[in-house]
Length: 122
Image (tube, rainbow, N blue to C red):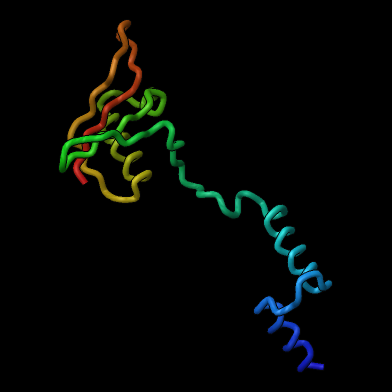
């Protein structure tokens, strides 16, 4: 009895059943149930990382990284704290320490801020 159970577990783990057998169908059903019934919160990163479309890395000269940050990410932040917040956002997104060199607002023709250019060193 114990030998049969161990053999069944071994075959299940090693996926040893022939296709179209009922054991194979049960395994596929369990996998599908896991994929579709698992709550999203189990696999979501709970840190507040912005969408990647709001931050983009731009081509730059050697030794310097240039990022575009959408204006809404820094709109509610006081002007004196914007460089620190921009560095924090980039460090979260890049996963590595970025040293902020300069933060430049980009205005449109009506002097409305469209976004920010952030210059960093890795």
